[in-house]
Image 1 (tube, helix red, strand yellow):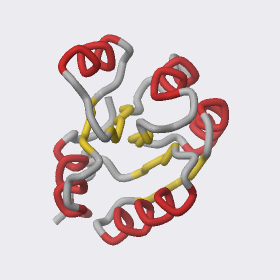
Image 2 (image 1 turned 90 degrees about the vertical axis):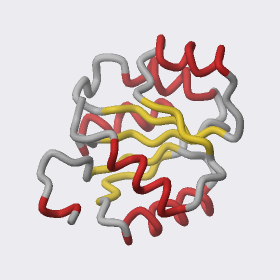
Image 3 (image 1 turned 30 degrees about the vertical axis):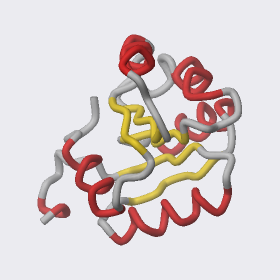
Image 4 (image 1 turned 180 degrees about the vertical axis):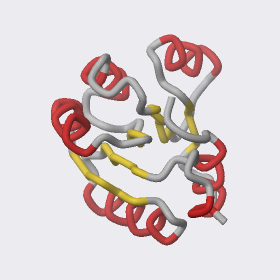
Length: 128
């Protein structure tokens, strides 16, 4: 079970400017054992929140105004142990490479089933 594995990702910071989607995501992942330590609406807010809530995982909506690149830049050096994961509607091979080069730990397509999303996040293991 998830709670028996202290090395697993537990603490999430969600970065999305779509309130309803963010709330639904937080509720769903909470049911799968994740602790949502913050929900913010911008890259700048993500950097501020990350300093105080020390997330294991920063989950970024790929459709965020300013994009995932803005979040990666804002978090650079702020929480080095946190993994950044982008939820994207579509991600081609070139964009996935650019994301990895920018320090994004993983990219996951938005249309995955909820349990699959939780499983993929758990598969990332503990903090970076």
